Length: 419
Image 1 (cartoon, one colour):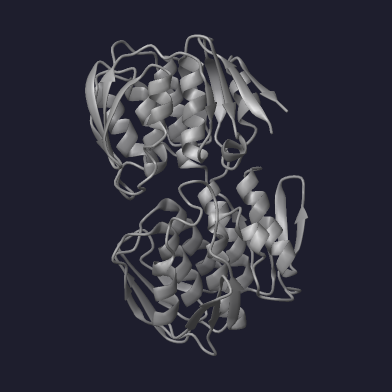
Image 2: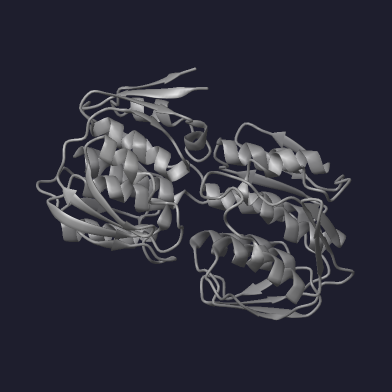
């Protein structure tokens, strides 16, 4: 298995460009199933999760072609509606294929979706199943597979008891071809949802309210396909901003949308990290003492759970005590045990809260990446640690960050991929 070897303390500087958003790409690929026409997707990141999603499309019978700067997906030849178990086990986002297959073909079979340690078999899909049933589908579970059928999906009025990004997107995709009007209440408001709705509207769907707590979908009988450009990955942009702050480097993050990072940048102002931003670039400046600051994750536009792990690294270098409150995933703070092995002063209060006392000098250790976001945080920790850090299971990092070792090397990082 490949691993990263990192020698900490190297000075970083320069510009790093943000790739296409993983969480947008993983939704537009299954969205292509809604039409029998060919979609052209630009700016897809070259990462493991996108590759697995395209593998599912190919396994279903679609024709996927890669161009110099785009992918085309022709779904006219889809030959079956059973999602491959081996592929689904590698990808939590395999659940996103269910709604479009059900909407277009009236039937779908799939196993419980897999993914990383915070996804595989642990995160329930009841919100998805309830949404399908509310639209008139029957749900059966036997022989470790779900079997969902609907002769005609119908619009419904659905309230999410828990705000869910993928749940909101799934119900949108399911409702586009349903008969009647679907209203989604307490929906998620992430920019990726707006991008998905804007694309679907451009090819014939009738969706209003995306980006607000209430989304309305008027079902249509058919939609077409067209070009889609994946928006920049705001989580990657935020990760690089925190990387600059942790290493006290002046870095420019290009091809991003700083307005989508207001929760992070507001905290930067409070804790003493200067920055400059325009419409598509963010420059983090060198700083003096970092002030400790409590953080609580929240759905957009609040602080993203996907930036909680890097922010935790930042607080190990801040002056004073801070509380990190993870409100969305039960297991996402477990990685802090590895930080304590590196010398961080962290007390776990419960599965959702830790107290960090800083600043502390981190020291290189042998580590294993438990999931995507904790994995990139281990890389950031290794870059400031004294000595050498070895990170195993970097497949989890490759799931979401394209060619990350070479991109960090271009900034001056001492990081090597060992196969």
